[in-house]
Length: 209
Image (cartoon, rainbow, N blue to C red; front, side):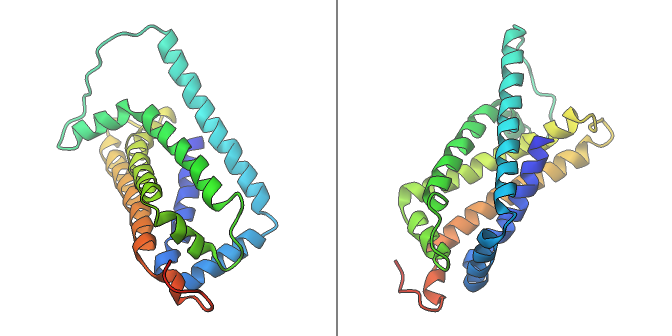
């Protein structure tokens, strides 16, 4: 449930940041309105609680599995051309999660603490993404997110007792499409912002950085 709540946030976040390369003025207006909203601190606190719960539940599950002493050599029953990728995503959930946690800390440090002045959000984002190491981290995080969701959506349905032999095909297909959409979406936004000139089109903005 915590993971599904974070997916909803990611959907809303992707919809907002997609405005940056496509409609710079609307992105600045959206950012300014969002940060002026009196309810934002409560939403951010709620997101922090959900993220910590998701991390905590994942650690508890991993520690429980380790303490159970199960040393069986498990073989994936998945079939099809994406079966190796699905097995890789399932076996590297912890790695993807740690990379996403690292990215989140860096991302907040770059663009939230402190927050750019109103009207300069896109410019600040371009400054960050035009640094090769930062862009590489953002693209790696997009890939990690895709892998995390590639397995996570199916695992969430299984944990909720909603996965059965009759619906696992559509659930896997929808989950993999969602994972690919999020991964490609965030990666594309990062590249378009890094290589585009959206900030220059804003009233009063300077030339390309």
